[in-house]
Image 1: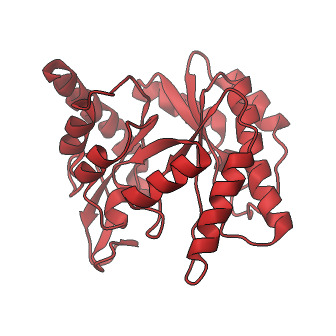
Image 2: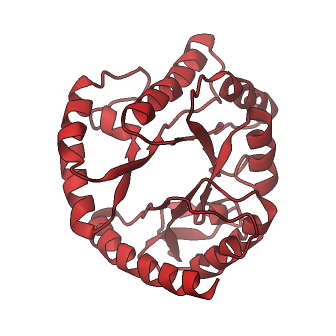
Length: 262
């Protein structure tokens, strides 16, 4: 979807801001093994925002790579994300650590920490997302975040993909700088799986097995809570547009209840 259509859709749902994904910078189906040109994208984005805020810029980096040239590219991707965040007034750049396979877990962890440390983030905050199995647990996210000096993007649904109770994670980690909300439903033909082997698919918010309300309640009850962006990231395929429209209504209703009770 072009960024102009994405912005139009965001306005139609009534949200006040967006997260820029680096997927917008690449043609569909093109491997992200190079640094893209951004002039046309930035021109289209500037013309399309029309009052929408850019809350975060997302970078799909992966420091599981060991080739020095590829590692530099992964760094440069984050550097580009920082530049875009500066230009469009976002304070957050969402990043990843690595998606390694054994026996490369330890070296990938250290590579991620060292390279995230070295990124010139200027006045922006790098926010590390909990993602994957190996580096998707609270202890791993915390260790990498502290080692690299990043903030945290707390993806409520992703915890299930690592076999972690999101409510537990809400109490074990520092308060996040960015929150992602998604839902899953048990589905024998689902494209995702938990560590226990349960297959799951994306679901409309509130229809699935992710304890969204309980997790947000836990987060909002923390003494270190503060206002942060909350993004919807729904994995609903062809129903994605409808799921997002309904999801915005659902999360706003839930947030109104939670805020009034805090």
